[in-house]
Length: 401
Image 1 (cartoon, helix red, strand yellow):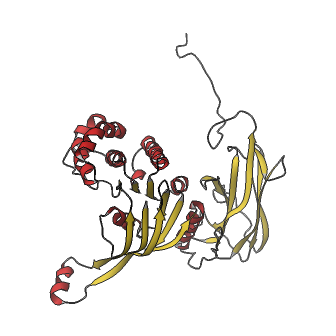
Image 2 (image 1 turned 45 degrees about the vertical axis):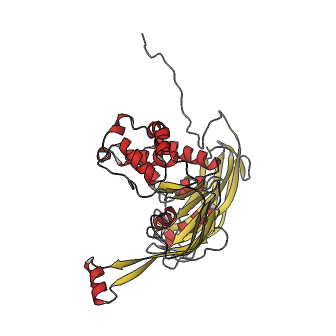
């Protein structure tokens, strides 16, 4: 368990290293204060995962360093329950001149393991890391993915009460990333608390019970993952060149834009069902009714399908399809037709009006959860996973005569 109350942390920024000494001797202020965290409060209970999101420099890594004890706060209170370990900056606590095996000893002691615990878990750490004979080689010969394997393996085998992860899982191959995520879920099911910093929005939605959004050191929002991620997407879009005046986020799902074009109605219907409940494999039509308020020669109309976890399943737009849409003032209806070859479940439809290929530079109107629909049942052969790729199976002798 972790409880944080009114946490603040600032840093002194100097233009030149020598200004630190000059400030002491001349008794002049030669620095600027950077407020990395400002009045941050939250709680993570046992068995829960808190995702942390924000742009670069928002204060995410500083927060994890404070929680792990690497940094001390200027003010505020941190209550920790039990041992905390994790992956902060890749390679933290390692000596790259020593072998992987020697680093297990050193790093294990640094994160609070006893010599007996290290001896007992050494083989399990080596096996989980899948480094093989490389465990006897110096870390300076390792790739970044191999360093991540060793760091994660040591940290998770320390059997902490709280596990901190700061982007480290972005390094490495897909096989080991999936292995790490499985171990993280198992850790959480056993009652462990997790704080997870990542720019992988789908991973945040899947792993987190709540998401904390930081912006310039302040808590902007904390709550249900998809809702907070949608607000983060709005903040990212607002940084675009044509989006400085972007507005419209309310208490519900983000619904924002410059207002130069507006979404009026969005609906998905099945060709046979005639409703928003369709069968996997059925032909469907997405109707997007919109209004253009002034001539917009670069206008693009797009849709995005998300599953019940908020993961992006499929998205397309008129720019990607290389099909121009009406851009003169007036009301228009765009229709996307496709076979809905996705697994049974509940889905949402996001719609957007923007310039060119995406909404990050100029967003006229973006609406999350513009419509809901459900896929019930499968037409044809059943399948596993999220989407159907319609394979053709052939079997022949491996040794033809």
